[in-house]
Length: 390
Ligand SMILES: Cc1ncc(COP(=O)(O)O)c(C=O)c1O
Image (tube, rainbow, N blue to C red):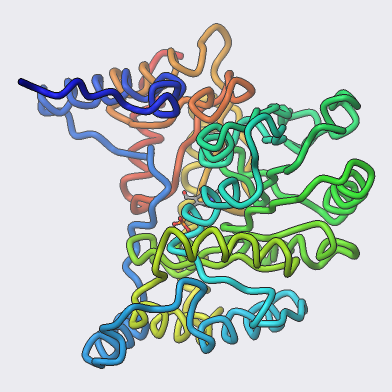
């Protein structure tokens, strides 16, 4: 006799997987022997700096690190996060109450809803967005209300357009600058407006700051916590993943309002046992070295960005030159949907991109390119796309 196995409602109710068609076309192209260039994933191809790797090797051989870590992070790691925030953003944090380590920011983003969202609660989520914000809500029985990010508004949320009855029910608001997938950046005025909105409607602000270190041409993106009143209403998620080319290591942090950080830490302590201490020791080294090791990657991404954007524009495509992130958000040529354009790029140029609507309905009409391949390949991308009839 076999069991009747049923997945939970939350899994069965997940939105349709929009990338399935792309995956199918990718497999078919590979089977035909096509030399695909994959600009679909936002995962640095540059290795983690060797000073960080050496710290891991050193830490891995210490027996004290072989035991369970604390789920909120070693005191030394939290202190080094506070020090980094002080140096980088001039933001003072109490490492005991205003910093928690995360097993990558994705983990904390998901667990934020475990800590703060009850069934029926409304969560305001930008669209398009990194999907974990709304998946977290849905897994915990909350209701997502999507706030479109439109080109004419700098891809900032138009908070005045949220109906008052929705705003009154809202518990959390998710924002993310520099933004994935649009590559938009925030300035102080939008963060100030967010603080005002949060106070008006009693809404918790969750700012995802994963890309603040990938700014180009001397531009240094700000932290939400630099804005007056932000600590009263908000929590910021950050990560060592993109900054130090450490996506595989799983280390990040949430900082800000002590009640929010404490609530998240409480949820986590019931679900996980923290980050391998040797990885935290390597993280401390990464944060200590800071810009010294980030600047070389920034230069590489900036050069790649220029090659890709210039090449795409020469091929007749419309896109802004991003001031931050490793994404380029390209408008679809007239008459093509995001899915059509992505399929055409894959089938006719062997270039893998991500359809904008995969990040939410408001991403329709765009396609996201990354610069996570070397410059020769990016020149080839431009050359191949130039040959496609658009
Ligand atoms: C906007 C954004 N936030 C968070 C993450 C998660 O990063 P990690 O879990 O590696 O810290 C990503 C990863 O792509 C992202 O794009």
